[in-house]
Length: 265
Image (cartoon, rainbow, N blue to C red; front, side):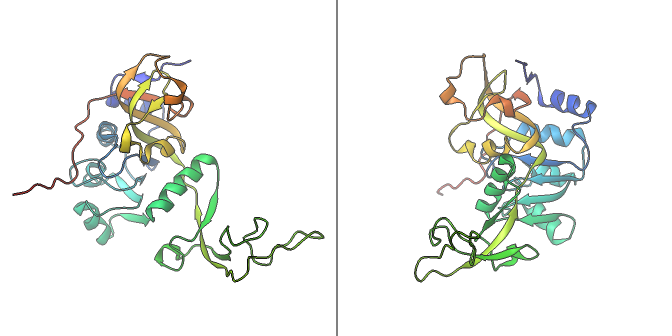
């Protein structure tokens, strides 16, 4: 059982760069929702490593001076695959000027694409975004909703040769679905509350968000954590991400910045 802990984020990335794991042009998943549960110290170390031409998969792109906004500022991100981008003026500027490629996803679709990638599912059909700009250039198909089909069949006209031809329930009509592909990255940076030396992770409240699924959908996973526990300290039921998914663990201190603060005058 290997000890996966490193003393700092810069040390971790220096090791990965020396081994050729960290390189230009790679695809990186970054956990978090807004500024909640983002691996802020890993992002900072990734910026300082100097890698460029990155494709980043993340729900959003931080804010102008924090989170992935730091990598946008230094032009290290070539493409963003994301869902919500409304809090970053630099993101908007680069996109509108053609400097940054963006693949926009409905939020639930992005989550399912990541989950599918981690589960080894190459693609799936969803009604979300069908008939909109989201579906342009993608395969679409008319299908019945799962609860409209008979015998589990959702494909109009489908039948088992020599056996039976399922039919939809009375009055049901097919609707348009769009084919979305699963997502898998070279590297995932996630944030957890607690970990042990083997990499078993436990998340805290809403900081769980995209982190657990991203930890399953990358070839190499680094976890930034608040607390490092000895082996055996976790009850099996307390583990949210098994250590078999995690390659490095770094204990850090986080700023836990608030994205938007509203006060009364």
